[in-house]
Length: 217
Length: 377
Ligand SMILES: Nc1ncnc2c1ncn2[C@@H]1O[C@H](COP(=O)(O)OP(=O)(O)O)[C@@H](O)[C@H]1O
Ligand SMILES: [Mg+2]
Image 1: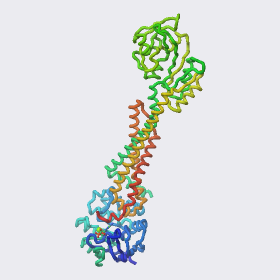
Image 2: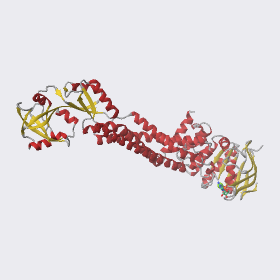
Image 3: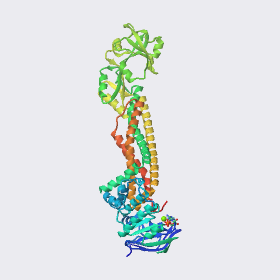
Image 4: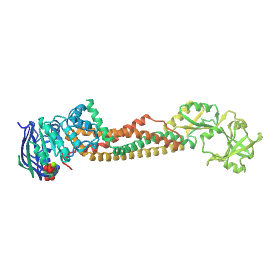
């Protein structure tokens, strides 16, 4: 059975805007899939549905053996907390907490904060020595690596990254891509949304969406 | 579990501490509210006692008269009055003996009194000159009577208890104005009037000024009635009544101001918390994306609110005490004691108010959609 199985998924906002139509996608354990497409094509909408932040208006979604098609908000919250690790284009680090505290926040909502483990996660992405710095004191690349450490801390079954390199310069983009490559080699399942052909090429498989329709696999 | 509480506190503390301006403004609002509340409550509680004291400047509030057919009682009774009022703060007890005498051959009612006590009981008497000294042959003339005699301060007058009685020379030590019937009289030290009229050890009445109002004053009347022989104590109605009215109005005013300030504080803190929630929408969305449920969000914001309430409350309670202290010193010329009860009350009230003020903003916070974190803005 696939780790993620989308069948004929569609999404309408406010009953009018058709953001997604007839999406079929299956992702196996250990896959690295890149989702590409122009702006406004529905990539983020798809991430929101897979990431249990929103529910599709049509079709079915099964994640890690759980049908989340019609799950309630609290159920979605629990599934998201236990199974998903998210990396954002804008990093979304809490500005008043240090790097390590930002990682611990994810532990806090998941189970128990554990500073040593959080430091180890920062070390894993090469920013352990910045653990006690506030996000404003970190470069964009460092912030994104803290964000990756936070996404990994609760051992998610699926890592979602929406334009993870969108706000980074080339050197930092390469650094972050290197980390994703390593995560993939370790067996993590990764879904990245990207504009960049290089980032798309790094993935095993590329899915292109245009105007809410899937173009190619 | 400890690491979980610690993380909660870290988030609650640093969300404020690492953003100083917002923290400062909110704290200021809470502190000002708490200052006024603790100050006002202190004033509210202290005003009656202070005002009672202030009202004592308007004369006796208790009159002790001979009971039944008697026209005079022994001056031994004065001690008994003082003893029956031992639980009260006595401002003064002025004995009076009244008798008709001839001053420069003019018949006039002369009052014999203890001038030291008289000054305490009736500080409003306006004197031109001095009060008669206890051992000296000195007389104080009411302004109206002095005019009738054509006497001035320093004039010499003759005093006699009546036809055929000894005539003595007295010096006018001063002229008194009170705006009342006292201006038609003359006053000499009590012992001298007793001697001249042959009424040794007698007094006609005593004016008592005691710090008490309302029920406590009624109680004082009963105490004197029970503890002193041959006398009937009476309230001086106008004074006791007007004191009660003024106090009631004053307390109502203070209460009103307190309520208005409470409401203003509530509005101010609510607005600030609303701004905080709006400012932190992304953060709330992120926390939800990381698995925070509504309970977590509510607890964090309430925690923030209560912490603000506690800090602001402590600062405000302290300032409020200083405020009440300075009001009391300036208006009543007398300090007040720090009341732990009021301090605790105003601290708890600050926390409750900020807690309440956080409710609506917290409601808004829980409605934030976690999907906003992916929607780039
Ligand atoms: N919350 C929303 N309400 C209404 N329309 C939305 C909402 N989110 C996205 N859309 C619309 O859905 C379409 C797809 O958007 P999105 O998934 O963000 O595209 P992408 O991430 O590929 O740029 C767009 O037309 C966008 O305007
Ligand atoms: Mg997008």
